[in-house]
Image 1 (cartoon, one colour):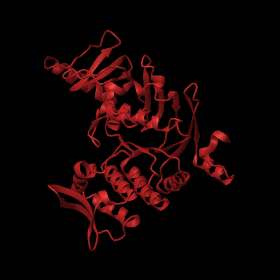
Image 2 (cartoon, helix red, strand yellow):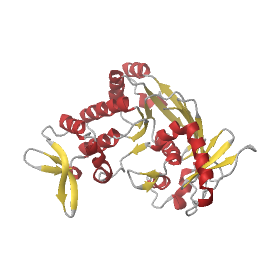
Image 3 (cartoon, helix red, strand yellow):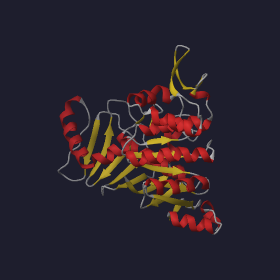
Image 4 (tube, one colour):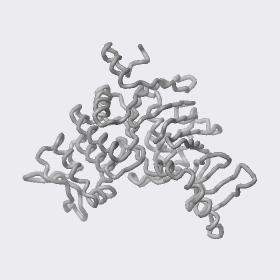
Length: 368
């Protein structure tokens, strides 16, 4: 589990420090405060452990520059990630884990070279070493005379394997956490259920609780979820007593619930980044979906990072985390637009209760 985050020179944030993270972490604040940037920081760090976003079938560095409007890739739009586009500065992302290990990632402004020496534009600093991820292993640049530099090629296979083993023995659990991190936002295509997710769901018969979720809130008469012929292939559909409805034709709330439930059912011991979950969801749908999500988080040891503008979502999650037995904290972000320094105020559940009893909205702390 991630316990603290430090972000420097990323997007609109010059520096931000968030301590004492919990099982469920909700970020609130004005537009442009840096909430989504915190999610992107974790997503970028996860690229060290797994460069490929398997849900979107894209490299993470390409997606992180595309998701806010960039139409190219890392090589053409990478400067948009730097604070004030000052690419001479380092982007720093520092994550402290519950194991006690702190991993410090540095994003470098460089064009990625072609394979076989495919170095990703992110490096990891641990005591006495800087580590670069390569296409087929890792390369160590030692900070003391006892370490060696290993560059991947067939001749050095044995060296890299030895270094990999030492590397994963020291921070393997942290890298496994980062390897499986997922980013759930509005740009997540629904067709990935059919092409990536649903086969694995069926293999473990995880479709049963997902169907109950759909019945409870979105379609009480649903009898099943399965594939039906469509053109030259198959499409996923909701089976009703007298017909079937293609999942892609469902309302946005039901589609998002089905998509998120299927993805989260397959995860374990990792982080989940959720941006503005309240979009397209009725408050009743939020209750049902969050109950499902939080039960999974408890059972499968998922740490949630959620951005929201919804006081309803905050209250729903507050109540449900207490019922499930998860720790929750709300973080209010306020960024000085001239300096880029983000101030973070942590609020416990009782603080939120007190504010609301006084008739105050926690989202409006900037004017209180």
